[in-house]
Image (cartoon, rainbow, N blue to C red):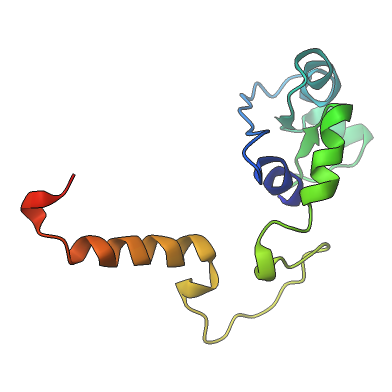
Length: 123
């Protein structure tokens, strides 16, 4: 999650990654990023589960070498002050509202602005 957020932070490395479930670790983890220069999200398969002991809730990401510098630069910028770091610490939320997420705050503000606009003049 943190790596994908770091890749997309500046809008330069947005990931589009189709899944086929077969040979993804080799093909999408190494070959495709090397050939295309674009990162790939990898759905781990049976070999990863048997030989690498990956669990069912794990995924991977293949990153071209040149893109790694962008990840390193942006890794702790994502989420602004709400970045929980790594490893993610599980907490029991109390008295939280959707205002903890900057994206929701932005959307709520835009919706409130639209409520005050005459409906016949909306674009």
